[in-house]
Image (cartoon, rainbow, N blue to C red; front, top):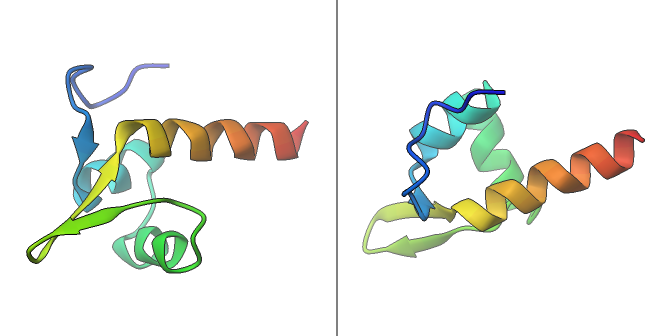
Length: 65
């Protein structure tokens, strides 16, 4: 599967996660609020570590199996 993000990204923006998961802004923030997707803020900017996104997807795949 091809990703829209260069492999060098270590911290992703919410729009990048929206694109990667093909989800709405509301759903991405819902995942963050419910602690299903880890994130951090710097000032007013929210970032999602690439590893957190990878772990989130792996967890969902394990649940689906």
